[in-house]
Image 1: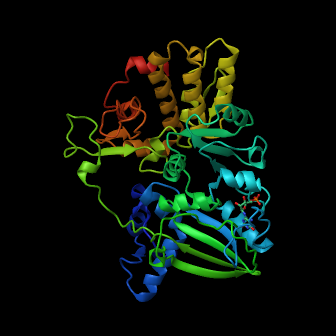
Image 2 (image 1 turned 120 degrees about the horizontal axis):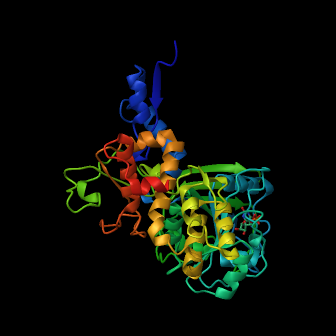
Image 3 (image 1 turned 180 degrees about the horizontal axis):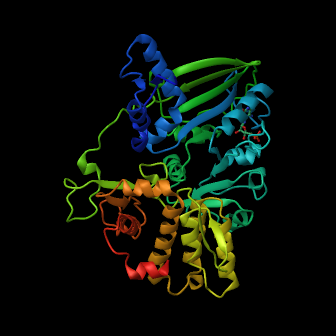
Length: 476
Ligand SMILES: Nc1c(N[C@@H]2O[C@H](COP(=O)(O)O)[C@@H](O)[C@H]2O)[nH]c(=O)[nH]c1=O
């Protein structure tokens, strides 16, 4: 006699996963009660509250399309995060700093501003456990006014990204890039655009350990969801000593942001207060209205057919995206079988394969070693832009075949993906990239959607509804 009843605290916030397990269990004759639906009482109301808090990162990310962002600071009893000289070690005690390492260990990235780099020269590593998760370190600096030497530029500690304004200090950008730091330029550097970028990289949770100026800017941009404030029983004084949050433009105390679901905890001699700035989003199923789904094919009215759009690996059918973590084994530039971490790695590298030039061969190697599909794409795209002469001359006419070969390998290597693809029979597949109008469908369906088309082509071939077309076939 196995499990006879399951109580579910929260339905999955991601549409394509929501309700699947509940349905399966009920089909097996197991009683499934969903809190807030089948179970209503004061006790279950509290239980639901706890489930929301535990799942906050995924709920915020799914609802706002930015990672769940936590602002953390340590402050003396008189409200300072450092002495007026900027000296700050240490405000909070060893136990509190241990808790910070744990927080870092649960974050995909840590964000600081340029000021913090100059003043603290931080390492921003989660040093409490050996071999633990190593978050990416992100420096936001508009001016790129950064020191040439800094702990953060030692990328052996952790991957480091500097987000800056387009064109800032190109000379210094190159110097840091040579050290392995990834520099990402933004038209207008601001917290929301950086968070959208982090969302696209698949980050679930980000920890802001920045100074008051950047903290205020992030709060004003409404990208901060939770605060962890460590209070130390110390008085440091200092008229100009820095405080945790800079200018928010509030003139009356009644405008202050009231934290929600606040918890208090003593940590050795310090006090830790944490709370949410915005209520945790309630993602009970919302059926998207038809006009929310971009119509891809003008002839096909969205009223008659189902359009499945995918983009980020987190999204509905995200496994169809080229960035999805599904390795493929295909011959490399020497014809040796190589396990490409993702379709993206294979595709980007093949821009430079079979070009008889040592630099091209180096680029292929660089892409093969790229630690993420985003990095592979960044290398492939920047090299293609900067060194077009290194791209194979027949690229425009072969890139579709290259992509199709990789996709066929991906789906045959991972059968559950084929099942997922077949489950979309009858639907139009759209890669909803707003940037890439060749492979993507674009925001209003203005894109060519080649990735969607190749996936539908593959689906038809598997279903046997069309003969495999000679052209693509012979290139596989
Ligand atoms: N001084 C201070 C903090 N300072 C924050 O931690 C960063 C230093 O990180 P790391 O170099 O990895 O130790 C520093 O840049 C600032 O963001 N944090 C705290 O929890 N308590 C403290 O007393």
